[in-house]
Structures are given as structure tokens and as C-alpha cells.
Amino acid sequence: MFTGIIEELGEIIRLTEGAEDSAVIAVRGPVVTSDARHGDSISVNGVCLTVIDNESGVFTADVMGETLRRSSLGALRTGSNVNLERAAALGSRLGGHLVQGHVDGVARIIAREPADQWEVVRFSLPPELARYVVEKGSITVDGVSLTVMTVDEDSFAVGMIPATSKLTVLGSKAIGDPVNLEVDVIAKYVEKMLGSRNV
Image (tube, rainbow, N blue to C red; front, top):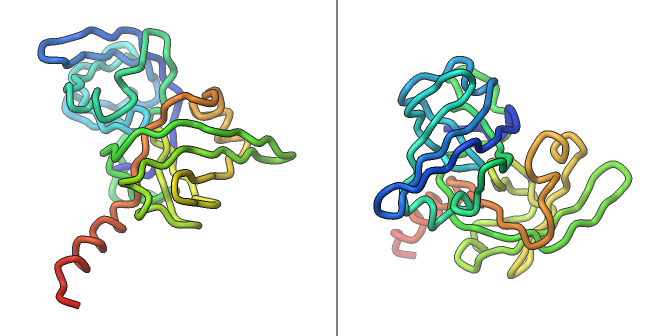
């Protein structure tokens, strides 16, 4: 479980294709690897990955074909920057919202509108996720916990403060670039529970 508060920008230093459409990635991230052990979870652009090895500030992780197909990790290349966050510890502050690291879909940036103190960024919204996205609700974009400003049938917008632009990959992404989305898991549970009732 994560909170969507990015700890550092990491860098892909190696991406090796494996058998059956899988891959092994090596990511440089001195902060998140400072106490990482084999089997720990680290979020990479919003995708929960398991640490296989950790040495000299670089960790490696296996990425299944399913993950490559359902997220934007398949588009990463050597030198790509990525958002990194260690799993939350019990008893720590929850600065963002509850994030599982399970990507629900991939969207694309469709507009960026700079303002004096922030930027409004609009993303496409996959039809199968639209019912989970509400104004003033939480959403995770490339692992970043954000608040939805506006939403319509096929897009949503967030306000991005300068710190978010500077400290995450969202600040350098261009219109058309893919991003990973994770909707609020509470909305999915509520839908399932209400759907099983005879109303």
C-alpha cells in the first residue's frame, strides 16, 4: 500500500526483455533503496513492483507481460525518469490517499494550461473508469495522488502545484504522453457491494 506522495525521481538504467513478454528493470533511486530489502514493494510510476536485488542505490524488479500491457511501463527506455515511492509504514502519516499500486488503465495528457501559481493538466479518461472519477475525489496519475478538479465523459483535469511539477515526471511529460491511472479503490468496493443488493 502507498500514499501517492512521491519520494524521488528515479532513472531506468537497464531494461532487459525476458521470456514470455516479461522484462527485468533496473532503477536508480538512492532514497527508496536506502532501506530496501529483497521482497519489498516500490511503486514505479504507480505500479507496485517487488525488489529482487538492491545494490549501490539501484534495485531490480521483474515485470510480467500483463503489467507491461496494462500500464505505461512498456514504453520506458534506458534513461527514462520514473516516480518512486516506498510502501507506506503502519503508523506513518497518510499524506495523499490509499494507493494500491494496481494500475486500472492508461490515459494520455491532452492539455496543459499554465497559470501564475499552478498548472491545470487535462487527461483522457478511459470509458471503463469514468464512473469512478468524481469532482474533488482522489485519483493516482503515474503514482502521484491528485485531486480531480473537473471531470466530463471522456476527460478529467487536475491542478498541479510547482512542487509536483518539479519533483515528479508529470512536470516533464508532453501532450500525448501516456500515464498510469489508478482510481480510488473505495469507489470500486462500494460499487460491488451496492451491485449485489436487491434494490
